[in-house]
Length: 315
Ligand code: C5P
Image (cartoon, rainbow, N blue to C red; front, top):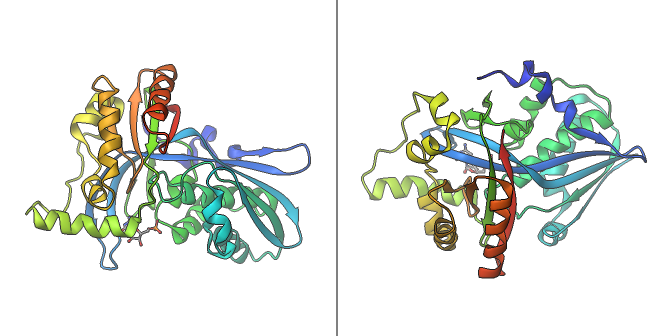
């Protein structure tokens, strides 16, 4: 069932790069879904140890790379507004480009165009996926041929979720995000993802996790899962045996999460409904994409302020 990303040729990072007719390269940066997320400890520097099952949708952001003498970054798409007002150097895409150039000792440039289709600070790993896609795209554009391991080492310096976003395959992620084990999900499902339209700060939610556990006299951390194969192989097992430990502290920061969860629970037949990452996006799994699309339509009618996406996951 398990194999490492490095020795699975179908999941190599190079396969994520597509060529355009004009010499440009494209890399898709899909949404990351934490099918479960447990917090198993805390490092002295405040970072938390996780045990999490990451999986990726098909749709997401899209990044285009063109040769150029200098580094230029632009952003378009439905969620470009906030990013367009920020200093481009503070975007993880530019940080990834600079880190790669420095590591490889190159002074090449690139035009990098980000189509921002995923909401920002939404628990879907959009920024991390964009950074990972940038490492992959520029590694190809600049022909520097860094190995997957070297890219992963650079990725963890950019953010805890970035190494996992290098691959589009499902993975069990441990450590603070740097330990990854590829898994095959023997199921596929339609998925609806809803974001209530409020950005949530990841550090704030992680800080709230500790306070939440302390206040309720709960054990400080989750125990690691012993029978992972069983959990991964079956959606109902995932539902019963796992959770997202950041969901309660996230609800304290963003109560709208409860409203989205309630809507999805009323529109599923006991399938998995859960928040992803540190929120505020909540997802539900369905038998197929058509079922997911029908619930997505209902969700848009129910609350036109929500961001709603239907897609496929797993398999
Ligand atoms: O690494 P990244 O920038 O994604 O993390 C944002 C913040 O989330 C960190 O500064 C930290 O507060 C928290 N975090 C954590 N443990 C992790 C990942 C993130 O405490 N494994």
